[in-house]
Image (cartoon, rainbow, N blue to C red):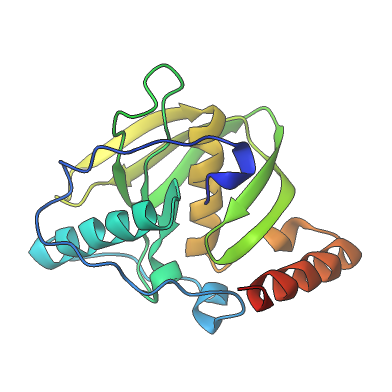
Length: 190
C-alpha cells in the first residue's frame, strides 16, 4: 500500500531492519503472481528474516506503508508494514506479519487506497474499521493484535494481496476498466 493516497509522508527509522538489505524487484499489475494465492510459511529461519528485511527496505524505497511478498515475486504468506503514528510520524512501527488470520472485524470505512503494484492509481475501497489479527513474526513467535484506522486498512489491503486479490477487484466492472486505463496511462508516462 502506498502513502500517496492518504497524503501521509514520513521518514522512517530503519535501524531495526538489519545491515545488509537488498531492494527487491517490485511486480507491477498485471504480473501473474499478483493474482495467485500465496503459500503458508513453515520455516522460520535466517533466510526468512533476511527476506523480511529486504521487503521492508523495498517498501521504504518505494515510499510505501505496506508490502506483500507476492508484490516482490515471492509466493509466501508474509507482509511487512510500517504505518506512521500521527503523534510521532518518523518513529518506525515496522511489523513483519506471517500467515495472518483475521479473527474479528468491526465497522466499515471507505479509504482512497494506493498500491505500489499500481503506480499512481488511487481508488476508494470499503474495509473493516477495526480488526483482530493472529500472526507470526519472523522469529516464529505468535501474536494476536487489535488494529484500527489506517493500520487495519493497510493490513487488509496486504492480506488481500496474499490471497491473490487486488484493490481494483472491489470496483464495479466499469470503474475497474477506467482505473486500468488510468494505470496504463500512468505506466506510459515517464
